[in-house]
Length: 216
Image 1 (cartoon, helix red, strand yellow):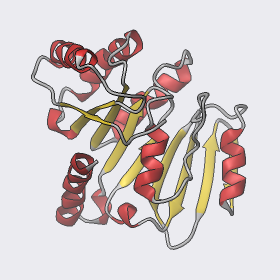
Image 2: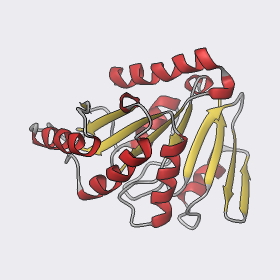
Image 3: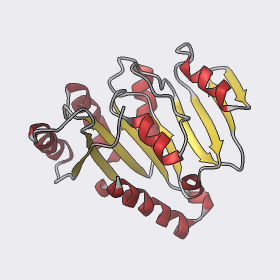
């Protein structure tokens, strides 16, 4: 987790140089059970992004700093305003609202210097979900990409080829790849296989770290 904190701190340095108008955005990407929302909740200091045994994030969640809680959903011909966390949680748990975005403001210190984006799982068979993740990649300054401890899987390969094309004009060091070893000890096979595939996709040596503290 210290490595992640240092990675995020580099985004905060960008804010110090550029100011509020160019506040960096960090998107968290991975499959639905890789620990994305749990990691984001840890960074925010409260459980506000939905966590569950089934896919729960069906739209993009944008987190910015605010002195008090406020949230607004914007979808295709639909808008909703939430005045409390319980109403937002109920809305996010309802799978009848795929797509769109939710802008959330909360008084989390980390959001004073960067925006955080939670994304749908890339293992979704929904075209709209993948489109939303690609949108988040385009909008982001940095990416935290989580793999399950099984390592790279077919859906990762398919998405990462698109990801590499989108990111080709950006700095590869602005992507932090993590293998989430939350279900026991990894034997090393999955991490080495994943590193090898990442090298082929990005045509460069790619750093891949592992952690046991990012739980789904």
